[in-house]
Length: 190
Image 1 (cartoon, rainbow, N blue to C red):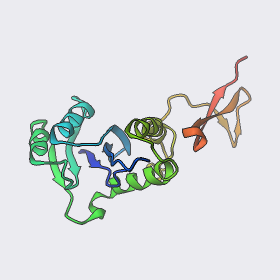
Image 2: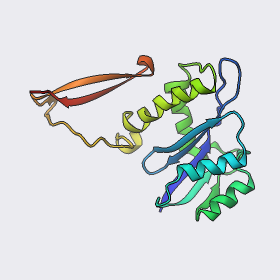
Image 3: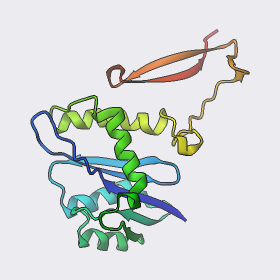
Image 4: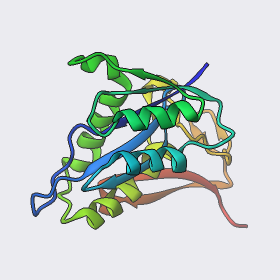
């Protein structure tokens, strides 16, 4: 049974002007892939329902959705999820271990991104996360995946032992102004 775990990031990052911004994330537990994310300063039940409509694919195999007891998951949200044929499981009260996958994601987002950058406002936080989320899904190894990537790259250059094949080179791309880097192998043009 495929499971999507949903959470609202508990840290609710503050901007440089001390505005609280709520980050909503849908996390696929099996692949550790971020399926959908968005942020707002004023989450409502209607906004949360719309995030589920936008974020969960119609043909997705998800049957179970786990979320915490945050106020944005009001009864109308659970009713809308039930109408989407999703079984809702709520984590136990005051038990962060019950939401371990999401707690791990929150810690990773803080350690690798938000502890190093102070967003000026909601739009700046959106730009930071728009650059970091693809890094999280496509470039950052996840130890739970052996270590693997949630979105495995399709182009694999050949390795011979611990050396690159003669017709390949390593290319580096900076992320978030050099906070992170992505290293890829690519074929050298002849």
